[in-house]
Image (cartoon, rainbow, N blue to C red; front, side, top):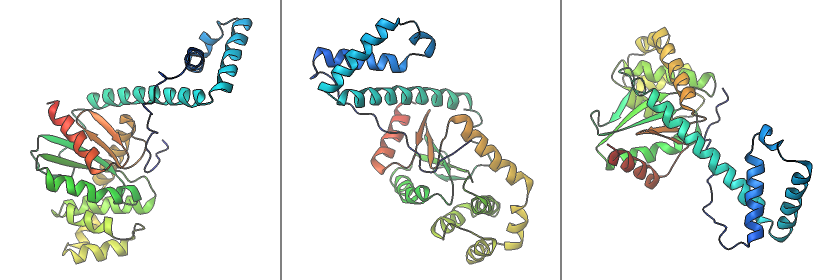
Length: 264
């Protein structure tokens, strides 16, 4: 699976076609229909019908080139709706396994809204998003944040993720995570040791725990779950029954939480 950091699908425009003439609206409809039809259905048009459609579209595009842009936007919007529906179905199917007792938790452990965050310690978008999430937790004490370490950006990511889950066993997941996210992204065992010792953690124990197959299995399970949910990059949030891809700003985050809360 190719997972791209910071990926967010393009936003669809709300611009309508009410101001366009009947020819333009017809051309837009024909263009969208032809583009969205499966090959088997498109073959049902006769050669004369296809030629007529092409001519109508060509004439309309000469008069209003924005028709093509609107057709593409319509296709993107429809694809986005399909992806959102698929994500909701996948989240519902994984409801019982979306969070586990092994997952690190921040915020209110018994909050009325759960936010699941898939992240990679090396992802620059995740690092920029951290203060936004911290602001939400400081302002909304009803949010339970569940971390899903998802090391997809190379060996340094995997090393850091193992260190974080090992630190959890010493009751220091959040302090270690904060230290790692603020340190240079290309972590090494030496740099992680320095951070751990600064936090007064037992480094020999942490190093042993980092090699524990149980931690490796947990990280593999996180990546597998992300794949099943349709996560295409980091950060990615599951809020209520919806997948929110990419870093969002605080107002958007608050809105998503409020919608999840009202859906209870």
